[in-house]
Image 1 (cartoon, rainbow, N blue to C red):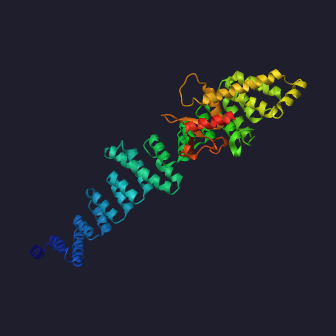
Image 2: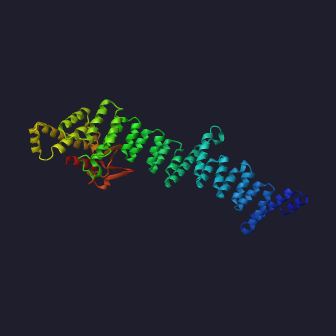
Image 3: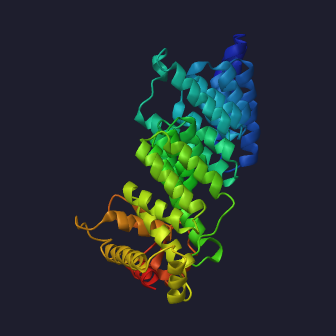
Length: 453
């Protein structure tokens, strides 16, 4: 390019003289690149400065980029080359590690995928979220912002990567901010469940007013009282009340090393049972009466035969197997254990109960327990002749949730350390997140052993 340069110089054409000189220097640098890198860079820098000085911005930017001066190249592309070179400007900003500038330029050019990619690379999570929100809000007004499925997938990947970052940082508040930007509640649920972030999922469902879904998640946590709260909010008053009765029954029988009887009077029982009755008021009167009867038995029991008799009668009318069996157990375990013959004679002599009544109570109790044991053996069958009420009572008594997993049933323990499962080998237990289930055959065996003792 030497002779053209001299010609332009003699003609007094300074622009073309400088342009020709810079092009010549660029050509020389390209030829020397492998043989003498140091000299090459010096020649290339001179060419770049000349190109920049005469307004050949794109050529100057390419030279600076070849020199590895990516930020200077990026600024020339961005400030002097117009919208046609926005992508190159952003690429150079990225190579320079100027991720903030790169994201801004990609966003200006509506390069969605590249913008989110550089936001992720530079950990510009909030900036990326702002861009996603902007694109969503303005897509209808600006056809250039209409995005295909590949963009949606990239957005989801970006949001998940951000949420995962904050999950690892144990920053739940920031994690949820990105989760809430997912395209659907289903994606939110699946993501949070995969992380085991059930507390956060419950709060999210609550915010969206999805109380039944919040109840299902509380069940996954094994928190039956929280599940009851959300069932109540969802209008499932019967289930909400029964969950509380179940919890009070099981915890009173098996918590803190108890052997299943007598029931312990736990400090929280009164408040819980009051709540159960309050919720039950939203159902029919007969159901409310059942909850009141069972609540009274669970809370106080009774030493007096007259009260026990009234409670048994009410339980029978209401179809409360729990009430019937607990009253019978109170009668035999509290009133008559000891010297049964002497105690019976004393009661008869005091005109409190007849020997016929004692025989009746004993036969009644034996019949109930036989039914419980028989029904337990049919847990795995669909036999329509089996009285499921006795199965349910037994499971409730032992603190076992019977949960469907859409294929079969899982038998989940409310209290993993309950005395009745103490001798079951640990290999028969399975963990499901925060829940522990027991093999059904081992459940049947251990339960029948308890009720037969």
